[in-house]
Image (cartoon, rainbow, N blue to C red; front, top):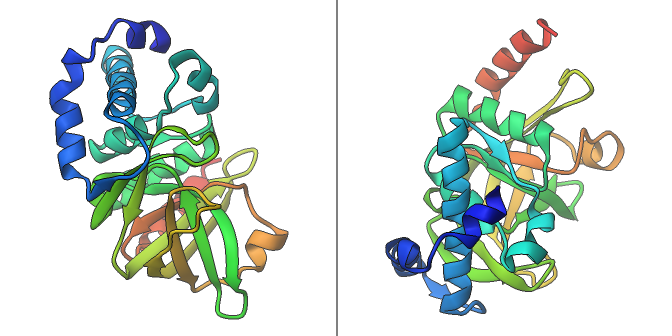
Length: 240
């Protein structure tokens, strides 16, 4: 149904949205204007699904869509998260539920990312990266290609140093929770990682990621929300 919607949406229908997205960017690096139009058509196709089924959150099976639409879902996820609909990548239901909980608890949009590189274990410094982020979470953004496929359109978010919280809820009954205050030190631009790259210094040790991680994707939200998140997740865990 997503692909059918995409095929029936013309470039003219998304022209204003494309112009707004391009004008809001710091620059465009690899994609052509045609690439941006395709990405925005997919965004509109998914928006129709959200409206039709009254979704308050969803996760996209991103990689299966690429050969069918010749674009990527990164822009769609970026803009729907911007509009208050938690939108996750790669069909990851547990992280989507984490995103939905974090959005309901904090009222803030959040960023789903991969723990990508330990910079300094003793200082708890690690880079988290992914190819989509809500523009409102950034101080500026660059329009890029999707890292893994070198195609489509992705978002490289640039953020100033700030306080953040890293969260993940998972397990067979969603009973496991990881929460850590963290400091965003800088955004990096490593060509061998997903486009938005956040170098964080976490309060909690990184052994969790090496030995006992709940899963790959984790959720990052601006601000220190650890106390409130722990309270609510504890209440939810007691009901499972």
